[in-house]
Length: 429
Figure 1 (cartoon, helix red, strand yellow):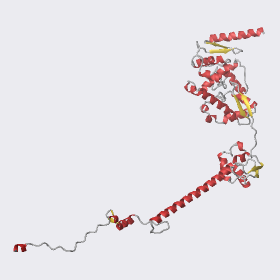
Figure 2 (cartoon, rainbow, N blue to C red; figure 1 turned 90 degrees about the vertical axis):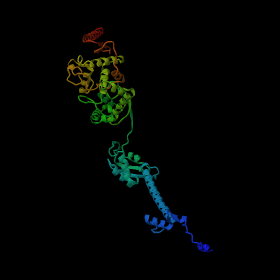
Figure 3 (cartoon, rainbow, N blue to C red; figure 1 turned 180 degrees about the vertical axis):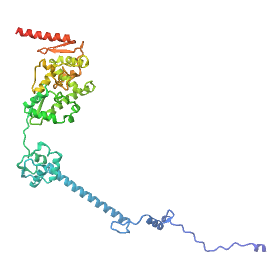
Figure 4 (cartoon, rainbow, N blue to C red; figure 1 turned 135 degrees about the horizontal axis):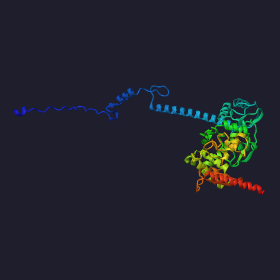
C-alpha cells in the first residue's frame, strides 16, 4: 500500500483551458504588415497630392472626377483653337481665291508703276481685299515686283470685290493680244541668218538677240552649252539652234525664241541617241557639230554627206600629212560674220585671211560650228562612209556634183576637168 502512496499522482488539470492565439486576418495583412502599417508606409513613400480643388485629402472618386474635368478643359481648348485657326485659314483662302465673296464693284486709282505694297493698301481701303499683308505675301511668291509682265499701268479702274488676287493684278496691266507666227529655218542656217528671219517676222531685233546671247546664261539651263570654249568664237549658240518649223508667240523676249530652238535641239539629240553617241566618240559634241556644219556647207546632195564626212575624218586622223582641212566654207563663214551679211564667193587672197576660222591657215577644226546643221549631216558626222579607198580631197562643180581624190595630183586633175567642162558649156551657149 505504501508503495502505492509513493507513486506520484499526476497533477490535476485546470478546468480552464488556455486561450488560443488569434491568427491575424489575412485580409488585413499585406506582406507581413497590417493594413494600417502598409498605408502608413505608402504615405511616407508618396507625399500627399492635392486634388483639383486644392484639398489635401480627397477620395479616389474625387481624383477621377478632377482628371476628367482637366481632360475636358484641355479638349475644349484644343477644339476652340483649331476652329479659330480653321476659320482664319478659310477666310484667308477666300480672300485669295474669292470662293465666296460679296459681289459689288469698287473704284480704285492706281499710280504708274505701283508697287505691290502700294497696290495692297489701295485695294484694302476700297474693300476689294481683306488682308493687305496676305496680298503682299502672295505677290512675293510670284515675284510680281520684278516680273515685267506685271508693270502696273496707272489709271482709274473699276473692279469687283469677288475677283481673286490674280484677276485683280491682271486688271491693272497692259492688255496684250497674243498672236502666233509660224517660221521655218532652213537647214544650215547660221545664227546671223536666224536672227534676220526672226526680225523679219516681228520677233524682236537683231541687236536685242545679240545682247541676249552675250548676257543670258544659257549654260545654266542647257548642260551641253556649259563648258564650251568661246575663245575666237563668233556665237556660242552656233550649231545648237536646231533648224525646223516652229510656231511662236509674237512680242516675246529674245531668250524665249532662242530657247525654243535649243529645246528642240535637246529633244532631237535625246531621242536619237546623239548625246550618248557623243560620249562614246573620240570627239566632243561641239567638235561633232563643227564637222556636221562643214558637211552641211560642202555637200550638196544627201548621198555625198557621209563621203564628205569620211574625207574630213581622214584628214583629222592624219594631222602630220594633212594639218589643214582646207574647206572654202570656213572662210565664207568668217567673211559673212565680219560683213554682217552672207558672202557667196571668195578670192585667192581670201585663202590667206588671218582669221581663226580659216581652215587653210589654221590646223584642225574651226573654233566652232559654221552653221546650224541638219539631222542628216549630224548623223553622218558620227558615222562617216567606209569607202574602198581613203579620200583626202573633194571638190564640186557649179551643179553640185562632187569629185573625190586620194592624192593631190588626182585632186588637181579633178579641178582642171571641172574648169574645162564649165568653159565648154559657156562656149556652147
